[in-house]
Image (cartoon, rainbow over all chains, first blue to last red; front, side):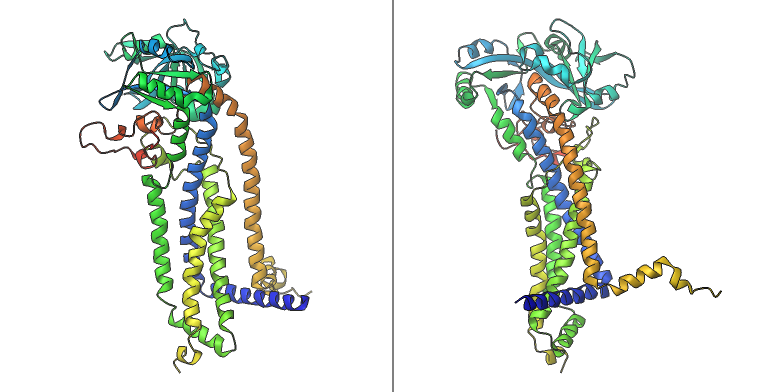
Length: 401
Length: 115
């Protein structure tokens, strides 16, 4: 029994030797196929790793997002919500806390950058006292402090503060509003706070010239998290003109926002599909006369059809396996060590403030198997089937006899 | 003393002779092992990076809950890619009737379908 298995192993090793020599004989063609194949796998794997790392980060972080966020809608657009709605919300049983917030975007025309400005009473928020731990320097302004702001790392660089602690922003009427930097967010929180400027509610109202009695949205916290959906329905019934966003909805957004159906994802997938169709068409259109002749000579020398199929199988396994390994390794290096540099022009577009992406993709067996199923297995099928068709032809007819 | 032929003292020639003596399957096996060793090293480095990032999760959690943040600050060029979770799906096309979405990041970020 052991002798038979050793003989079989020796036979397979000999076939592998022959397959490797055969690939080496056609090394230019083999290398071209391997490189194109590896590039396709690199593209698919890079996209998968980037989207997975961002989705993971969002899932880890957004468990702390407000339980319910309330916005007012008018003519299909979001608009300011009256503070008076708080009275109606107070009548809904189960709501623990309602925190009004003013936030929006400030376009810096000098630097062509968008800042996210957020004004709120941080001390009213859950974990508000712990926010100082997310700062690299300084402290959050107190509830009564005016004209003080905490800024993200990218804003600090964009404003080129370099030791200065003051800067000014324009109100809508082009008058200047001065701010003092009371702290800077840590670079560890760049993925959330890179373009963020946090100030008091009064300062944000003054900056955006928002009338008193109006805010941008409400953060609502409930007594029992299991009742989020029920309370959301009650709010929607009590205030029909508002949009109610629950924490599960916000979390779900980031589970679907990166996907193969996005424009860029579709391009990656279609490029890979087109490459495979061309490859499969080339292979399925039949073997070259030289390859048919080689198969015929092998059959004359006593090789069986199964041996020829084994050679073709090993050739395909070597090319597709090496391409898969090289493509996935290159994709991992690209995403982790080069911060997905090839995708950044599309991922960040015309953004002026760009966070330093520190992506740590999970490599799971399921994802690797999925990639293999989409790439290696079709290649095996595309190469072995024409070889089988050719190997079943009698040797004398293949040699022209 | 006669000099030895150069092929005897050249390391390249020796390596080539060794490689010629080895069967191709063995050479392929060595290449495979090298690639797998590289992948193993990358995986180990990746784990330590993940651990280091895990240490900063506390800061991220504090920022999210204290400010009620809803989105990642990755693409800051358009409001619907800066805050996809709280922007409505129509936002890319709202500038004027018949407007088409034109920001590059719109190609990467799929409009949310959960609202």
